[in-house]
Length: 369
Image 1 (cartoon, rainbow, N blue to C red):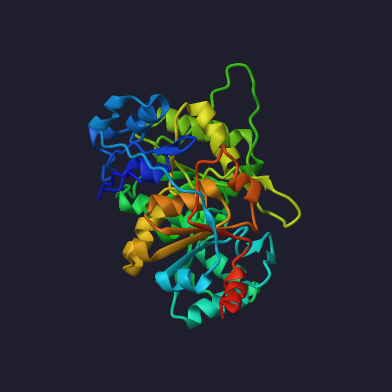
Image 2 (cartoon, one colour):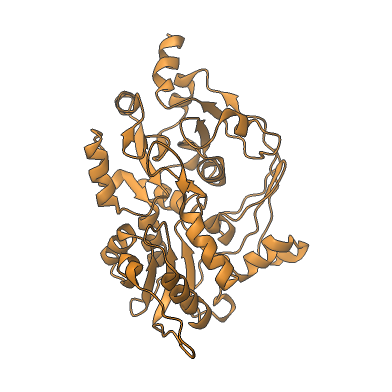
């Protein structure tokens, strides 16, 4: 494996910006420790987008590129060996812990076993509809003892990212999403507008009609939104295109999500895609597979990334999230990804290991004994 790494967090990492060929991932880097007032970075993704679209060699003036070839994933055979090799397990939620409102079989016993072995458990979800506190209640309803400090949702990541760049408190955030984003922004001390309240608003397209928008909006945050409508698309588009320096932030770009355990539903990526089309800009993604949350977690808990195993059901978010962060990775087949998808010649993302569900930790442990 050939890999070049930088100690600086990059825009490519934050956006999850990856250009896939069959056996290659190319990351284009731009430092993110910018400030909104810096003239060269009014649009922090401009350099990244130009590079990622055309793969020009002169992208190196902004950073670096890495090329990585990975061996095929191996079926998990010795659970104890993997468990003993790391200090922390990061679990995705949808498709790993639950589907919709149904707990996946064997999850409570598996988590209890890992805690008994002294492992730190962290739960990361791209679903932005709930705040950390609200997710804590969902875990409790499902009979799982998980503290709020162990939960990191992309709604929280959006607010944490704004804090990390010293987003001005006098600026406002337009929310295309649900209550989770609003609650996290409020806890972080930011003014916001939009959200579910705009779900019932309509536009009457009369001759000469001009839609007004708040010129103090400095960021538009787009997440999964069951109240999505044309009013929100137009309002957010005006803010992004017409307000100088306005950030376009996406909580995630997931194609599908598990609203119920009966089928897959269109995910937050469908809402984000509408704004990509209308603004002709790429978003800054704070959820998986961007490494923003991974960096935040490593700093928050003082964890070495080499001592983390990321467990998820999606190749292009969960597994890539772990790989971008330098962690071990385990794919479970209890959610979005099937074995045929993993082994497809068109798939370039290979985890270290795969297994059917996280409770295999128990059965494979027993088999080893």
